[in-house]
Length: 225
Image (cartoon, one colour):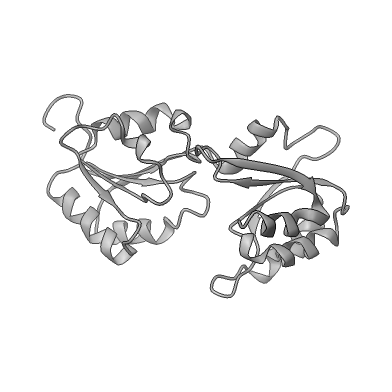
């Protein structure tokens, strides 16, 4: 693009939100509409997000690509004078795996900009019509995940420790360890406290189940999540 509306030849790390194209921010939409090259995780980001991109934009799906495949592509396109969008689901700052990307881009002296997106916990609160910081009840939100074999969490951030604060707590990436998560939560929360199990928020097949904490694991298994 050589007109006044063109983007700078940098990498834009853009949050796509949880899945609903209408939850894309105005800034993200404008960048997508102007970008020369768009790399998106096609297993996590609906293709409808790309409905208004330029007809001549280069679209690259990254579902089957590793970071070692993706980084050279982005660096090459920027060095050729192209604006590049790396489209992530949700918000890039939360479980977006962008830390290493930013380091490698900086080492390659490639400029980048981060554009935030709506995260699943925010969409869930809106769908449930709840406030996560109720005056006199709770003023803290904890976003975390259960420790897995491949990717652990720091000892000071173990779920049982975080749950002791009895704050509003949102679990990501934990369906495979739901029994362990339930056990640790029940140590500090009432077994009868309502919790929400959210599946593919913002997608056409979105599902939300509100159940007592003591039913969290069995419902997750029954729904094959």
